[in-house]
Image (cartoon, rainbow, N blue to C red; front, side, top):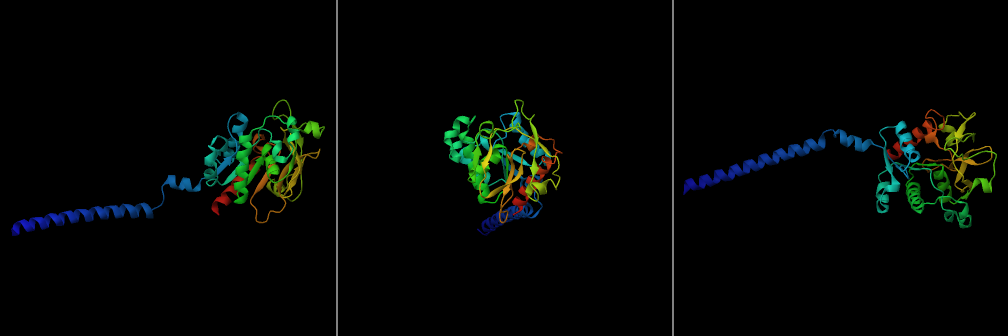
Length: 285
């Protein structure tokens, strides 16, 4: 009887010892995992800047937005919002550090209460309008950096309460060709107004700046909270930014296409790098 009890006791002790060993091993693994430097994958996920572009696929012109940003910083993660599920947009916006509203179709004139001018519009895209309104609403409420290009500048103005020239040849005839039959062949000079955001980006290099031009719509009445940063010789607004920048995030709109200019052009690479730096600053908040 006594021998049997001893054997049982020894068996129980062995079980306890094995359990204790397992516990110690698991504890060491846990502490090692949580106290050492994160893996390269973790570091990458933490540091990667994410930029949401309203549309960046479907043609070479759309794809150029991503190429332009990646030329400035090849580590940036680009998210094409146009091809996401609508019910996923909010979650995506919560994960990004800046938004770009790219060029493309005409803004629906119903959005600026000019539906009667709709016959002067070209292709409309209600899905696009909806996505960009969601992007702007989130970005402005959360003080996230915003860059608008061509249509992007126009829809920023509409979102903030402004009006558009529905068709430049019809409503504002000009000796300047703002759109040519061959894309990206129109060029004209612009005047950058002194001491504003765009002026600071180009570091005062505002003499004889020529930009590309490919649009038939433009800002007509500018929203009260934004102001012109640059204008064309015929008065077309070529860039916009906040009137009052206090307690606001980065906002820049341009009517031209910096993504199609030579990266060394004063209004191409410098804009891309400035926007990325603002996105990094937003991420660090």
